[in-house]
Each structure stands twice: as structure tokens, then as C-alpha cells.
Length: 89
Image (cartoon, rainbow, N blue to C red; front, side, top):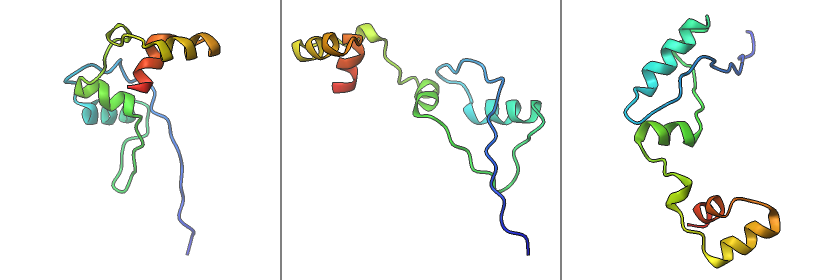
């Protein structure tokens, strides 16, 4: 009996995901288009970013007003204070 096989295949050709997009359909179409159609038993690994985009849960950086702590930390580590505040929130 052959041992089980595990392969990781990236999916190229996905468009920028926007609120309301049918993520499952876009992934299935892109996978098939590159010659690696989804099959029964396949496991998909997605980033939270792509799921959040489809759900409309992405906020612009400007939405976050940096606190004094976020500003100080960002200055020390040369980071965007708005992004730091988003992480702290």
C-alpha cells in the first residue's frame, strides 16, 4: 500500500478580492484554469486577509487614530503608527 501523498499547490490568477465576491467560486475557477482543479478530499488553506476582504471586514489605515503609545512604538521601530494602532486595537 502506497503511503498517503501530500502536495501544496499555490493558486495563481486570483483577482483582487472585494466585498461580496464568491470566494469559493473564484478559487475553484482559478484552480481549474491553471490545470489543478479541486478534487474531493482537497484541503484549502486561506489567509484571514482574503476571507476578511470577501466579508467586507477590511478597514483603511486612516480609520485608526494612533495613540501616544502606538506613536512612540512606531517611531522606535520605524513602523506606520496607524498600522501599529490597528494591531493594538
